[in-house]
Structure formats: C-alpha cells, structure tokens
Length: 304
Image 1 (cartoon, rainbow, N blue to C red):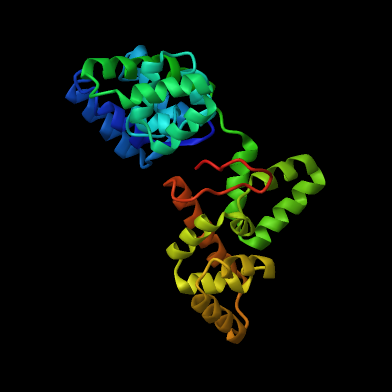
Image 2 (image 1 turned 180 degrees about the vertical axis):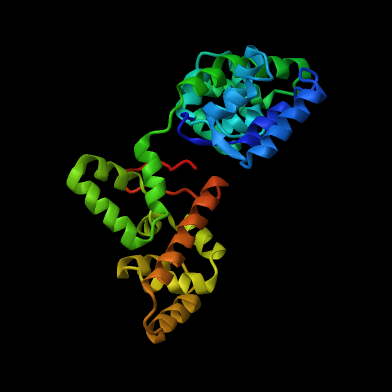
C-alpha cells in the first residue's frame, strides 16, 4: 500500500493489542485518548506511522507497519491466501518440499491448488505426497515457519507492493453509474487512449457476466433476487439475455421472458443499480471461490 492509500487505524490498534507488554497501559491510554480527540478513525500509512512512532521502538514500529501495508488477513495463513499465487509459488519453489507441504496445508484450498499448478510437476508431486503423509505439525515447527515467512516473504512483499493506478481506477470506474463511467472514459480516451483501453480491460462489468461458465452462471442466478434479475435483464443485450435464459429452468426462463415483455419503461438508474448489484454479488462469490470470473481482456481470473 502506498502512502496515498487510506488505511484504517483499527489495523494499527489490532497490532497494538498484541504488544501490551511492550507498551505500558498509561501510554496506550494516552494513545487511545489522542486518537479519540482527533475525531477521525482513518489516515494514511504515513500518518499512522508518525503517530505510532511516538510510542514504539523502531523495530516494533517497522513490524507493525509491515503488517498494515502487507496483504490482508488476520493471521499469516490468511495473508498468504490473499497473496498473488504466482508470487507465492515463485517464493515457495526454492523451499524444501516438506515446508511447502506445511504452507499449502494451512492456506485456502483455492490458493493451494493454483500454487501446485504453477510449481514444476516433479516438485508439486513431491509436495502432494508429503501432504498425504503429514500428521499434525508441532507448534514450534509451525511458529518457525511463520516467523520465516513473515521476515523473508511478507516483509519484502509489503515493502515492494504498490497498487497499480490503472487497477485502482478500474475499480473506481466499476462503481460509477453508466453515464458517469462513459463521461470519464470518453474524456480519458481523448487525453490518453492507451490508458483508457488498459482501464477498460481491467474493469469487470455486467457484460462480462455472460462470459461466466455455465456452472458459475447458475450459481450466480441462485444468489440473485428475482426483482434484481428482472430489472438487470431489462437493460441487457439480447445475447446476454439468452445466455442467462439457457442457464435457467425452462419454467423460470419463460416466466422471466413474460415479465420482460409486459414490463413498462424503467429508469436507467434502476437498471444500472440492478446490474451493479449482480456484478457485486459475482465478486463476492468469486472471493469465496464459489465461482470463477474472467476479465474483459483475457483469460486470467480476477482476484478480489
């Protein structure tokens, strides 16, 4: 996270909660009091670091800031699950197969599967065999692996990690209504066509839902309310409609077609809101590994 990105003070407070033995209750109380008087619960990474520097030694401050800047997660294994799998695999390929087996057994199954597909076949096969024969891991061994990952991997990752501006703008543009999105993209096309194309390729829109595989599309349809689906379909292209219809039961598809035929004019904003709701539902399902969504410009899975 760059200094321009907003971070919550709660992240710092969470870390402070783990080091009360290093900071006296009096200092901690003063910290909370000053935070309350400031009237804000948010700040930049720089302002958070400046505030904490008044109460913590440099080495402990650095550790906390690395936690804040690093990937999201309440513990080491959640953090690793949120790291880009290609980056994690590139690090793990140089570790002992037994160590990799322990790591993959602790992170999310989706991330573990992707890492195994990236690692060389012989190495990944060795890792799988070790996972099969692995019993409970001793606590001291697990702590040693966690400490190594924190100092050698997460630390370096947090220092080099900086969000791409095009990715950030693509996410912002995804939250615009259709008219605002068009207005900004049109202006940007005039001043920087290459940047506008890159942002459009990174955006995930309602039209991209029609590119879901049948299983993912059916899962999405089950998660969307009927009234939201009806309103979203009102503004959908015919090809997109047919894609949805073919993934419904004949009865539901017929009912939806009939409802669309008798449906009168609706506000564009209501259609946009419904389509945005479906996109957000798809993102939530993807985050839980219940569906796989593909971005506009290629075959890569989007990570949220």
